[in-house]
Image (cartoon, rainbow over all chains, first blue to last red; front, side):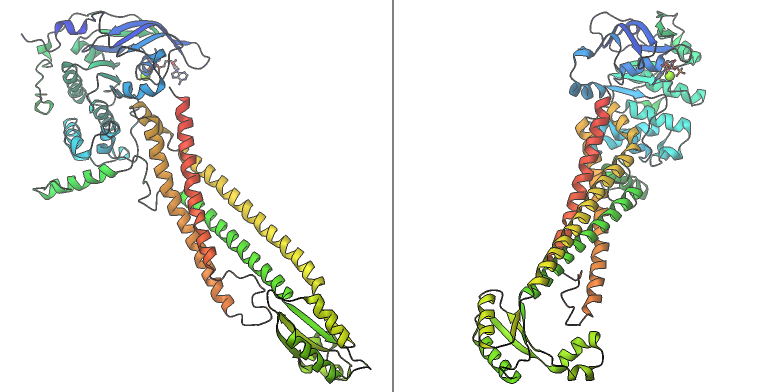
Length: 260
Length: 315
Ligand SMILES: Nc1ncnc2c1ncn2[C@@H]1O[C@H](COP(=O)(O)OP(=O)(O)OP(=O)(O)O)[C@@H](O)[C@H]1O
Ligand SMILES: [Mg+2]
């Protein structure tokens, strides 16, 4: 039986870590620590759910990962760079290797879906001719083929979320961080979106997926980074469910031909 | 679009996408007059005011020059009725001397009736004036150089008893001081309005930027370099400032032209050139174009600085 997740993929070999946290603490301003003594590693191709109750610090952990915040203590290594020693002008290049689905989407209001999704590619200096087919295909795949030229204000919450996901994945990032990316869509669409993430994961993208949706966590069976009040208790390798039960392992190379 | 499109449907997608290529990351960069509407209005109004202040400064300066110039280049010779020499002889001698004097362009005797009409406001009915022993007057126009007023004065007083040459210096000095003060006042008003405009452009640009904070942050987080983000904003505000300031000076130019038309009806020889006029003047119109240049530079630098300052505060 072919195993779509690849047994070894969720285990983190200590070498070649794409992300490495060493005793990281984080506090906002002069407040108390929101994250305490966080240490973990991610290897290329890892898939981690980031779980925990509301306010546990999931978004904060992701902010550290997408370089919006610096830790107050401890060290973060990203793609082999120790962040505390990386000059500021190098950070944009690291950020371009990271795709982020923000919890609150953060789409640019006056740009259409197409323009929002194309933004990372424009920033990377790609021309319209180069990126147009990818952007259109991706938007079609997330079910927004008809809404390519709508602005966010004309989209439902779930539709905006799908635009945000498309923007996060369009540049085929090495690290994809998703903050409750299926929080606003129906279960059917959330499975469909999950397939997109798994597809990318199969191609080598490391994924951290923050969610409250136990169903998704159980369905994929990937390891969790579980936060409780700012502290990490890494649940290692829960028993793998039969992937065939969800049909998730049958991922074709072309997302558009998905069987879901 | 270069790609040929088989169906109208694709064609539509193409044009949309084509627009997307040049689609500015900021709302309506320059291409639309509706962009940054509040800011556009503020900039246009301030540029209009600055233009008017500039025009007023130049007009006042010009008029003040004319006053002093007119006075400095004119003399009045008074021939007082006198026992030693008859009025006719006085006049003939005076004209004789003036004809030969260097730098004298014109010497015109003032007719009795004109003298009477000049005095009428003070003395009333001209029949009374006719009975008075009035001095005869000669208006003298000097060339801008080559005249020696004091030599002329001593020559005239020596030859003609009762002759007094008035070089208007009393008036001239006072007027020169007044004109100087007026010029400074106009300049101070201009300087204040330009400074205030620049400050308002700075504040308005910053206020408009505040609404774009989210865009700065998103661009930053998805990996845009500071330079790129600053450049986008600079371009955006440059266009707004250019468009708005051209509207402002355009409106001012229309006002100037209209006022020029009105003052063209002023044919009164006594006041022509003496009253400030905003009539067509090439140097005013070329100076007006400094205003958009300054405005664009101010807005662009402000936008750039604001973006860079915002970005400096984030990781
Ligand atoms: N910008 C901020 N300034 C100060 N405190 C903050 C800030 N953002 C978050 N916090 C605090 O940090 C803690 C963790 O917040 P965080 O957003 O990381 O939680 P979360 O796990 O993502 O929650 P949720 O599931 O509701 O999204 C919370 O107590 C929150 O109040
Ligand atoms: Mg959160």
